[in-house]
Length: 316
Image 1: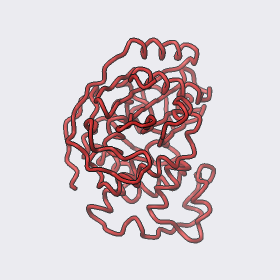
Image 2: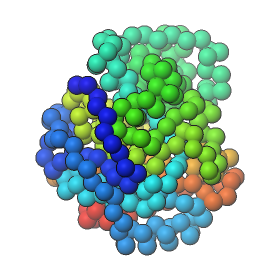
Image 3: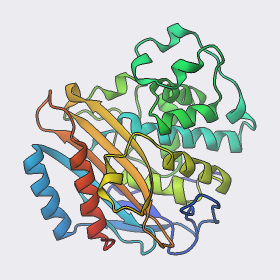
Image 4: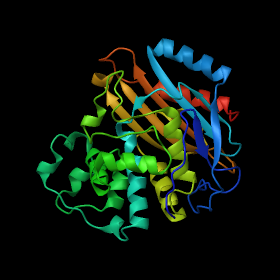
C-alpha cells in the first residue's frame, strides 16, 4: 500500500491496536494491522527512579521508551532527547528498500549488486559478510540480512544507495510520519558524534514509534513486514543488550548501534519482544551515551534499562 504521512508530536508514539497488526512470535504470519492509534509517552515514577540511579553509576545519559502494543500504553525517560543512530539506521534503511521494491521497483530485492574492493575503503573492519562476497556481489535482500543480523557497515551503505543515500532515508522517515529522525552521512562517518550534534540522530520516542510502525503497522506489506521481523529475530549483535535484560522464554528481535569510545561511548538497541503466550509484543528502544568522551559503552546498562522498561509496562 502507499505510505501516507501523518503528524507526529515529539512525545507521542504510534502503534497497532490491541488486536491485529502484529507479527507473530514464530514469524509464520503477519496479520493485517488495525488502524493506527496514537499514544502519548508517559513518565513512570519507578522507571524514572531506576534510570536516574543507573545514570549515576554509569556516568552517562540514558534515553528509553517502551510501548505495549496490546494495551497501547507507552512509558519513557528522556524520550525526546537526541541520540545518534549509529548502526541502528540499517533496519530503517532495509524497510525503505523493501517498500521501494514493493511499490515502485519489482525485483529490486533480487538484483545482484557488484562492487570493487576499493569501494569498501574504511569499512572492511565492520563488514564481516560483504567482505566475503566481493567476487560474486550480493542482492539488497542479502544486504538487509547482513546489515541487520551482523551490522555489516558496507551492507548498510549499499542499502542507502538503493534509496538515494542518507537524504533518501530521511525522506522515508518523513513519509511515514517521523518528523524527528534524520540521516545525513553514510558509514563510517555517521558514528562521529558529540553532545549537541543533530546529524544522524533520532530520539527514543521517534525511534520506537517508527520501529513499531515498520514491524507491526501498515507501512510495509505483510510479507515484507514478516521478512523484516525475521531478520531482526536472527540478529547476532544484541545478545548482551535488550535480550539480556528480558527473561528467558521471551522471543526478541533487535537491531543494535555502537559509536565507540571516541564518540562518547554511544550505544543503543531497538527491539520487538513477545512475552511467553502474549498476543501482542512490546517495542523497546534504549539509547545511551557517556558524559565524558573516551569511555566505552556498557551493554549491561542497556540490559538494565530494558528490564526497567518491561517492569514499568507490567510485564515482569
